[in-house]
Image 1: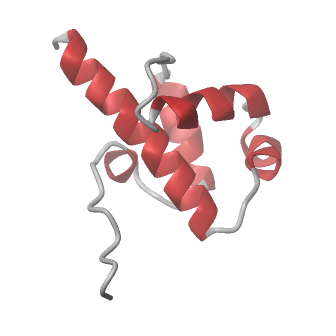
Image 2: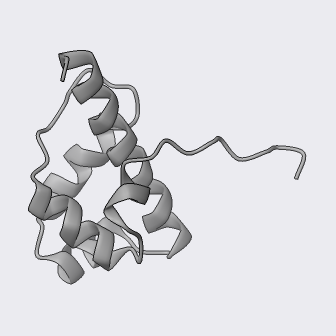
Length: 88
């Protein structure tokens, strides 16, 4: 896998964590309590998904734990989402 492909997956995962967390009205602190993943690490994951240059390596275990906590499959967490339709 190229570094560009890996970066794209990291950004997708971060964006999806933020979006699904928001849909569930969970704060980063609440998600941290559910997952045992530090709030700082959750913040770093999400910031990597916001187009910033910082990236963070995410383990398969982290993907699995976040998926369960957010009620999604790992595949959903790694699939790019379409932006919300402003006219909907």
